[in-house]
Image (cartoon, rainbow, N blue to C red; front, side, top):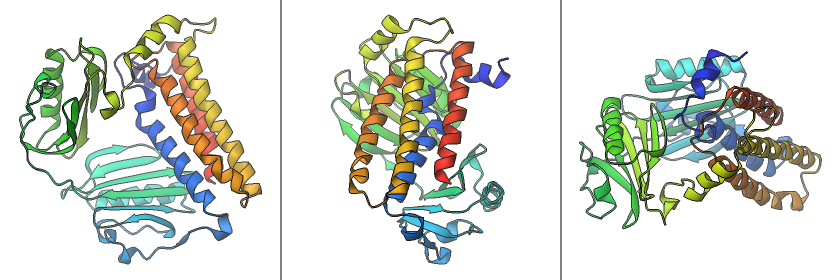
Length: 349
């Protein structure tokens, strides 16, 4: 029986799952665990008792009950630590402590992750898989008065209401810019303006994310970051690296090869899901092999192969971006997601 949550999650126009937060979190955890394991075995890694008060931004966050782990970043612009032996209850208590400390603005909460801003603009991100808890804190983004570009590609977009912003890249063929002083209502209105200007081809949309092409093949990504900040990216048909979008030919591939089999699963959908699960299974096998022989230098070299494999299944997903899922596909999606999460939890332990 298909649950209500499955019905809602797979409505046409929703963000595809490889852009969804749970998927991104899983990929991040895969990379973190691989890198940390390759630094040595459990008894000889970089774990240490972290002196929380000595961290640059330690006073901006509550101190965790468990502080044994590894520091990845520690500057006045950002903090990232990975803590060990954190129970699910310990994770829940830490989230409550973050909320009590004021991290409740634009909060996004799940059973394994939490993202929120405080009134100063600091953003905390906490994830918990297995007995690992990762904490990231980002300092407020510095925004200044900007002038909207005068290039031909910029003229395709409506000019945002706010002039506070920050360009992350800019060229004649495209750009990415953060716009401040933008409420969720302002963001929604801007998305509608872009749609009215022709960016409504092959679109994906949810409450905080919108991407689409126009008839000429130009591509936009618009995202509500939170804390009244919106990100806008646009790229030309010949230069879509600015936004990382899939190519037009991928949509043509879907149209040609997305026939359903007897189970009701589209061919492209099943191939994408199976390639993803196969990648995770290979990763788990690799980690078992590495744990049995952590001094084998050839295993370290194999790490690069996993990065290549990630690009492969990400490309598979892009081939059916924006496609809605039928009941059989939605149920298969949940099955694979559950198996993958269980697999990664075993490795994290």
